[in-house]
Length: 522
Image (cartoon, rainbow, N blue to C red):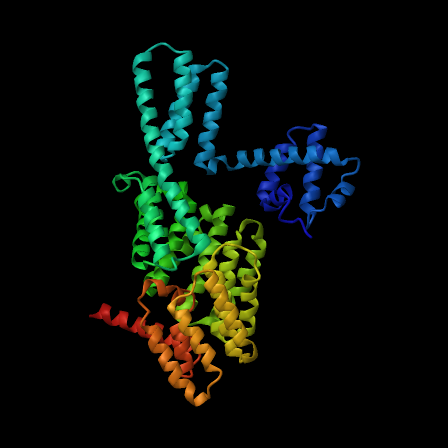
């Protein structure tokens, strides 16, 4: 099996841009030691390999034994990181601040205390301007060490000032830690379970928020405090399928960056994630016009140097923009047009494979399967759904469940009635085990069991009954998962009115668009 994505050094080298490789060569060749020349040979050998194979590598590095290779690899890894740090320092506030702290610490060790304090003071101003309060902790600690051990002038006033500053930083970091933990834990809950499945899930999430939300959280005015607060409420609302609340806090999240544009550069990843959630909220609420406006703004931002020149931001933007584009086709019923995205997405997923987590891959597979299903290509849809069903993971139980539901419907559409009954039992057992059955699914399974046993003439009344039953739950929060993952109402209407699913959804979209125009004109 290929070690392409498991060997850390190999992966690091193959993640480098041409400019980064060139910079490394210049950086390392400043020293002409034999060891550095050997690591350049190792670098070149690894760079030319398509897959990591130690046996081939040792053959290319003649005169290098296996124990030596380990030491060379370790040295090369450190040198690449050192080279990247030099190259990227101007692009990152965090790297700049750490560099300044390192300089101050070196001056302190040299006994040049006044120079050290001057650097710390300038770094402190930069940290405060960019709201990097965690950094201030180590600065304050070094300042106190210098004052206590080496400097006596104005000791009383400086001591008081530094003590107050330490208390202020500690209080701020304390609430930041609580809020960031809360946001992370709620997001983790969603990644593992998906949406709240029942009252018990909702009660548990409500209690968790109440128990962990700091009492004074809503009174905080700092950027990061509000960011983590809005993120916490985003995940909380999304888990509970309160899409109005989800939209409200996603918008607050993005507005926070619009209020403080400097922070878009400082926390680009958080900004991109916020826009992604805002797009999802517009999708859930079918806010077509706002969805399109937000997507256009996002695509423009993705073309800025800040995103294009940064691996992480570029990959994030690719994931979220293309996810949104698929969602747009799902909303508008333009499934076949959406298929034009698939080859590009798959090409990029392969290119970015070492950097994309399995959760994103599963979501893309489901969205692509939905496009093929809506286009009437049920066999290809099944191929993509099998990738989810056969994937051994404990993440996103809801995605696993609805992949099986869509897989079942694809076989139903293909007329594979000889396996439908066993598939129904299998999917029903799986969803029961995952505690993921809603009334919608119960009704759907009942309809499917009966539908292939009755004549075509009697099927229409059964479809009408099924449609009447599920429409009652369209606004029920615990039932909306079925509508979020699969537009089951439109699917039933396509069967009832003998129209393609894409046509039914497209007609709904056009009616909605027409109604919005009338509202604007009025």
